[in-house]
Image 1 (cartoon, rainbow, N blue to C red):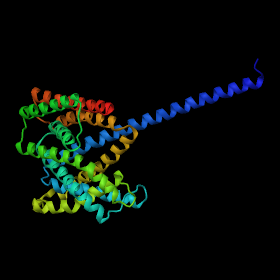
Image 2: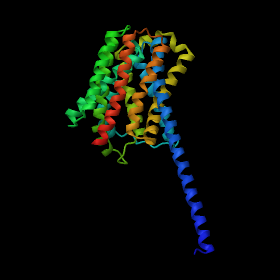
Image 3: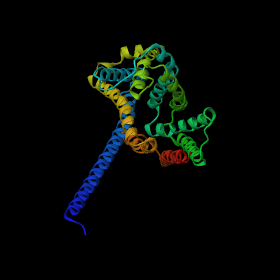
Image 4: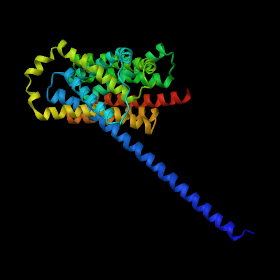
Length: 337
């Protein structure tokens, strides 16, 4: 038979088990809330960035995409540098050795941003999101030849569906613009090149840093800082100076407010994507990124009154669904490997 002390011990153990269970449930709830909040922040910032850029370039009819990119990157540099000086974040010092290693990938980064601006001026948001799927095709082929990576048949099937949707979307696009499509195809090649080149450059760059590491904040600061002199040079090469001097937009406070807001959004994407990736993982991040294109496409059509047809809408929806299938196939492929 148990004595009184044993009964008290059992009661205490029961209380401890309940407290542990309650504490475990609370921590899981906090973790789920953080994941949900970070995911919503990432979706909101990425969608808003594209829509605001489209608004500046089309609704304001701002014909200086390089200057817009330059100003957005300048805003990012000011914010990250300020946070680093205040000790909120840590960044690597920009040494000459690090700059030499990173410069080639920065050229691609600047080209990627500029071609995105040029294409967004001529193409509606929904078609841009569908055509961006071509980047996945180029990246997959690049991984196969550069890194000897073999993809699952489901991945190739999803990539094939993306190509079909991009071709059918272009054929049925009522607002088809050859110049815009050309810039977007170039953007796809540059975006794929950036992701493929970044893998190798990051490993080399870590070896020349003082800490032996290169966090995301340092890469944001490095990319945006190096883009400033190159962007300034391209402003003169593309003769945007005369346009900036003559346009009345730069004398409008509301215009400055909008483009400054776009600079904050550009930096917000970097922060929220890192936050969301930390709270969940690469698989959830890639899947949400694909699902994120669906409300973005709908918002682009509605907000900018894009003329469309049943065939074009079906092609866009087909491409977005293909993007989701691709993300799921990549998740399963990564899990099996």
